[in-house]
Length: 220
Image (cartoon, rainbow, N blue to C red; front, side, top):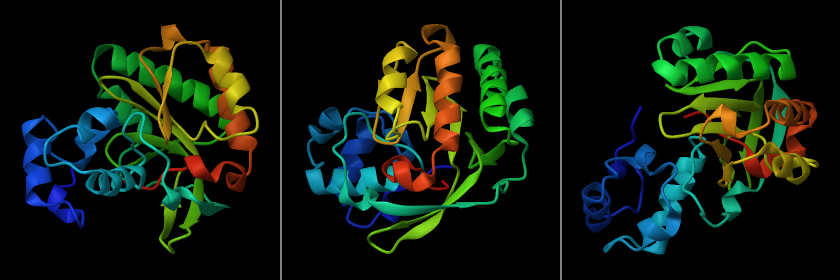
Protein backbone atom coordinates (compact mmCIF):
# COMPACT_ATOMS: atom_id res chain seq x y z
CA UNK A 1 0.00 0.00 0.00
CA UNK A 2 1.36 3.44 -0.93
CA UNK A 3 0.44 6.83 0.50
CA UNK A 4 0.50 9.79 -1.93
CA UNK A 5 2.19 12.92 -0.59
CA UNK A 6 -0.97 15.08 -0.93
CA UNK A 7 -2.51 12.97 1.85
CA UNK A 8 0.08 14.33 4.30
CA UNK A 9 -0.87 17.86 5.44
CA UNK A 10 1.82 20.48 4.92
CA UNK A 11 3.77 18.73 2.14
CA UNK A 12 3.66 21.35 -0.61
CA UNK A 13 4.07 20.86 -4.36
CA UNK A 14 7.78 21.84 -4.53
CA UNK A 15 8.67 19.22 -1.93
CA UNK A 16 6.51 16.58 -3.62
CA UNK A 17 8.13 17.27 -6.99
CA UNK A 18 11.66 17.16 -5.52
CA UNK A 19 11.03 13.89 -3.71
CA UNK A 20 9.47 12.24 -6.77
CA UNK A 21 12.34 13.38 -9.01
CA UNK A 22 14.82 11.92 -6.51
CA UNK A 23 13.17 8.50 -6.71
CA UNK A 24 10.77 8.71 -3.77
CA UNK A 25 7.32 8.53 -5.38
CA UNK A 26 5.31 8.10 -2.16
CA UNK A 27 5.61 8.19 1.63
CA UNK A 28 6.53 4.51 2.01
CA UNK A 29 9.40 4.83 -0.46
CA UNK A 30 11.21 7.00 2.11
CA UNK A 31 11.57 4.04 4.46
CA UNK A 32 15.30 3.53 5.03
CA UNK A 33 16.30 6.72 3.17
CA UNK A 34 18.96 8.81 4.90
CA UNK A 35 17.46 11.85 6.66
CA UNK A 36 20.30 14.23 5.79
CA UNK A 37 20.34 13.17 2.13
CA UNK A 38 16.60 13.80 1.74
CA UNK A 39 16.85 17.05 3.70
CA UNK A 40 19.44 18.23 1.19
CA UNK A 41 16.97 18.05 -1.71
CA UNK A 42 15.99 21.48 -3.04
CA UNK A 43 12.44 22.26 -1.93
CA UNK A 44 12.40 19.84 1.01
CA UNK A 45 12.55 21.68 4.33
CA UNK A 46 13.00 20.30 7.84
CA UNK A 47 9.36 20.82 8.80
CA UNK A 48 8.16 18.91 5.73
CA UNK A 49 10.55 16.09 6.52
CA UNK A 50 9.37 15.97 10.14
CA UNK A 51 5.80 15.53 8.91
CA UNK A 52 6.85 12.77 6.53
CA UNK A 53 8.88 11.04 9.24
CA UNK A 54 5.87 11.16 11.57
CA UNK A 55 3.78 9.57 8.82
CA UNK A 56 6.40 6.85 8.39
CA UNK A 57 6.51 6.14 12.12
CA UNK A 58 2.74 5.72 12.15
CA UNK A 59 3.19 3.01 9.52
CA UNK A 60 5.98 1.21 11.36
CA UNK A 61 8.61 2.68 9.04
CA UNK A 62 11.38 5.26 9.39
CA UNK A 63 14.11 7.17 7.63
CA UNK A 64 17.66 6.37 8.73
CA UNK A 65 19.38 8.76 11.14
CA UNK A 66 16.17 10.69 11.69
CA UNK A 67 16.01 12.75 14.90
CA UNK A 68 13.59 11.61 17.59
CA UNK A 69 10.20 13.32 17.58
CA UNK A 70 8.12 14.35 20.56
CA UNK A 71 5.11 12.55 19.12
CA UNK A 72 6.77 9.25 19.92
CA UNK A 73 6.04 9.73 23.64
CA UNK A 74 3.11 7.44 24.23
CA UNK A 75 1.36 5.11 26.63
CA UNK A 76 0.94 1.45 25.70
CA UNK A 77 -1.26 -1.41 26.89
CA UNK A 78 -1.44 -5.03 25.77
CA UNK A 79 -4.34 -6.28 23.70
CA UNK A 80 -5.41 -9.57 22.16
CA UNK A 81 -3.74 -10.70 18.90
CA UNK A 82 -5.83 -9.99 15.83
CA UNK A 83 -5.15 -10.51 12.15
CA UNK A 84 -5.21 -7.22 10.27
CA UNK A 85 -5.49 -8.64 6.75
CA UNK A 86 -7.08 -11.72 5.28
CA UNK A 87 -3.77 -13.31 4.28
CA UNK A 88 -1.84 -15.69 6.52
CA UNK A 89 1.76 -14.85 7.30
CA UNK A 90 2.91 -18.30 6.15
CA UNK A 91 1.11 -17.90 2.81
CA UNK A 92 2.69 -14.47 2.33
CA UNK A 93 6.18 -15.86 3.01
CA UNK A 94 5.68 -18.73 0.57
CA UNK A 95 4.93 -16.23 -2.21
CA UNK A 96 8.26 -14.45 -1.72
CA UNK A 97 11.10 -15.20 -4.12
CA UNK A 98 14.44 -16.90 -3.53
CA UNK A 99 16.35 -15.96 -0.39
CA UNK A 100 13.55 -13.74 0.86
CA UNK A 101 11.36 -16.84 1.21
CA UNK A 102 14.12 -18.67 3.11
CA UNK A 103 14.64 -15.67 5.35
CA UNK A 104 10.91 -15.38 6.00
CA UNK A 105 10.61 -19.04 6.96
CA UNK A 106 13.56 -18.76 9.33
CA UNK A 107 12.18 -15.67 11.04
CA UNK A 108 8.74 -17.25 11.40
CA UNK A 109 10.40 -20.10 13.33
CA UNK A 110 12.47 -17.78 15.53
CA UNK A 111 9.61 -15.44 16.41
CA UNK A 112 7.23 -18.35 17.04
CA UNK A 113 9.65 -19.92 19.53
CA UNK A 114 10.35 -16.60 21.22
CA UNK A 115 6.73 -15.45 21.56
CA UNK A 116 4.67 -18.64 21.53
CA UNK A 117 2.16 -16.75 19.36
CA UNK A 118 0.69 -17.11 15.90
CA UNK A 119 1.80 -14.43 13.40
CA UNK A 120 -0.56 -11.96 11.75
CA UNK A 121 -0.16 -9.81 8.66
CA UNK A 122 -0.26 -6.07 9.33
CA UNK A 123 -0.51 -4.30 6.01
CA UNK A 124 1.02 -5.77 2.86
CA UNK A 125 4.43 -6.82 4.18
CA UNK A 126 4.76 -6.64 7.99
CA UNK A 127 4.37 -9.78 10.11
CA UNK A 128 3.44 -9.05 13.71
CA UNK A 129 2.98 -10.92 16.98
CA UNK A 130 0.56 -9.82 19.68
CA UNK A 131 -1.21 -6.51 19.79
CA UNK A 132 -0.78 -3.32 21.79
CA UNK A 133 -2.89 -0.19 22.01
CA UNK A 134 -1.02 3.12 21.98
CA UNK A 135 -1.95 6.70 22.73
CA UNK A 136 0.43 9.53 21.81
CA UNK A 137 0.73 12.67 23.91
CA UNK A 138 -1.04 14.44 21.03
CA UNK A 139 -4.15 12.29 21.62
CA UNK A 140 -3.64 10.16 18.50
CA UNK A 141 -4.21 6.49 19.28
CA UNK A 142 -4.56 3.10 17.62
CA UNK A 143 -3.44 -0.52 17.64
CA UNK A 144 -0.28 -2.21 16.39
CA UNK A 145 1.75 -5.37 16.95
CA UNK A 146 4.13 -5.94 19.86
CA UNK A 147 7.09 -7.41 17.94
CA UNK A 148 7.50 -8.39 14.33
CA UNK A 149 9.50 -8.34 11.11
CA UNK A 150 9.34 -7.70 7.39
CA UNK A 151 11.55 -9.59 4.89
CA UNK A 152 11.97 -6.62 2.57
CA UNK A 153 13.98 -6.78 -0.66
CA UNK A 154 16.78 -4.46 0.46
CA UNK A 155 17.03 -5.41 4.13
CA UNK A 156 15.20 -7.39 6.79
CA UNK A 157 13.32 -5.06 9.15
CA UNK A 158 12.90 -6.14 12.79
CA UNK A 159 10.36 -4.25 14.90
CA UNK A 160 9.90 -3.70 18.63
CA UNK A 161 13.43 -4.63 19.71
CA UNK A 162 14.76 -1.23 20.80
CA UNK A 163 14.35 0.79 23.98
CA UNK A 164 14.23 -2.33 26.17
CA UNK A 165 16.10 -2.85 29.44
CA UNK A 166 18.58 -5.20 27.70
CA UNK A 167 18.44 -3.79 24.15
CA UNK A 168 21.91 -2.26 24.11
CA UNK A 169 23.51 -5.37 25.59
CA UNK A 170 21.85 -7.77 23.17
CA UNK A 171 22.21 -5.57 20.08
CA UNK A 172 25.93 -5.28 20.84
CA UNK A 173 26.12 -9.09 20.57
CA UNK A 174 23.72 -9.41 17.62
CA UNK A 175 26.20 -8.88 14.80
CA UNK A 176 26.10 -6.66 11.72
CA UNK A 177 22.99 -4.46 11.77
CA UNK A 178 21.74 -0.88 11.50
CA UNK A 179 19.16 0.90 13.63
CA UNK A 180 16.53 3.53 12.90
CA UNK A 181 13.94 5.13 15.16
CA UNK A 182 11.45 2.30 14.86
CA UNK A 183 13.35 -0.78 13.73
CA UNK A 184 16.57 -2.76 13.37
CA UNK A 185 17.83 -3.46 9.84
CA UNK A 186 19.72 -6.64 8.92
CA UNK A 187 21.08 -7.45 5.46
CA UNK A 188 20.78 -11.21 5.85
CA UNK A 189 20.49 -13.77 8.69
CA UNK A 190 24.05 -14.97 8.07
CA UNK A 191 25.30 -11.60 9.32
CA UNK A 192 23.90 -12.01 12.84
CA UNK A 193 23.83 -14.43 15.77
CA UNK A 194 20.40 -16.03 15.49
CA UNK A 195 20.53 -17.22 19.10
CA UNK A 196 20.98 -13.63 20.25
CA UNK A 197 18.13 -12.54 17.96
CA UNK A 198 15.82 -15.10 19.53
CA UNK A 199 16.88 -13.96 23.00
CA UNK A 200 16.22 -10.35 22.03
CA UNK A 201 12.76 -11.14 20.60
CA UNK A 202 11.87 -13.13 23.73
CA UNK A 203 13.05 -10.28 25.94
CA UNK A 204 10.98 -7.78 23.93
CA UNK A 205 7.92 -10.02 24.10
CA UNK A 206 8.20 -10.46 27.87
CA UNK A 207 8.70 -6.73 28.48
CA UNK A 208 5.55 -4.71 29.14
CA UNK A 209 4.83 -2.33 26.23
CA UNK A 210 5.11 0.75 28.45
CA UNK A 211 8.77 -0.03 29.15
CA UNK A 212 9.73 0.54 25.52
CA UNK A 213 6.92 2.69 24.15
CA UNK A 214 9.21 4.95 22.15
CA UNK A 215 9.87 2.11 19.69
CA UNK A 216 6.39 0.91 18.86
CA UNK A 217 4.68 0.70 15.49
CA UNK A 218 1.26 1.60 14.18
CA UNK A 219 -0.79 -0.41 11.75
CA UNK A 220 0.08 0.73 8.21
